Amino acid sequence: MSYQLMGSILEVCECKVLCPCWIGEDPDNGICRSAIAYHYEQGAIDGVDVAGVTVAFAAFIPGNVLKGGWRVAMFVDERASDAQFDALVSAHRGERGGPLADIVKLIGEMVSVERAAIEYTVAAGKGRMKVGETIEAELEPYRGPTGEPTKLVESIFSTIPGSPAFVGRANSFRLRHEALDLDLDLTGHNAIQGSFSFTS
Image (cartoon, rainbow, N blue to C red):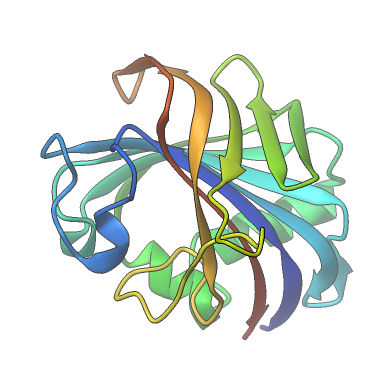
């Protein structure tokens, strides 16, 4: 069982900028309610091509991110074939090993897995994701004096292990999920963008 995957993420949460979780500190409010989308630009899982497919999560993190116990709901792009759906769910449940399995170790409960209409775009540094009626966010990176996005590297926690993250701000963030008791409507909070290359 193996995969080789390349793509990008958009991530947003209720913490103020910058995200304390990535450096191992407790979330600003003691808990963290967040959303993340993995967009697979190219790659395959056990021979199943998953290019062009997006997987997203709504998450409730009960305390320090490294202590685990996350409760999450998983969403797979409704355009995914049955083979793509099964392969992606298996990888994101940790069944295919590698960096994705390391992240799964922090999940205490996956409350649901379902298909959803997912929009994912990054243009001129600005990102947008929409996942059914559950998640909607617009975000942009902070930039340094040269205009390049501000990078976070060598962080103790990462949703894209081995790759730098671009820290940013969510100009809007709406998150609703009844089973996870999530209901947020925020502006100006933490956001992360980044690219990844995962191999198992």
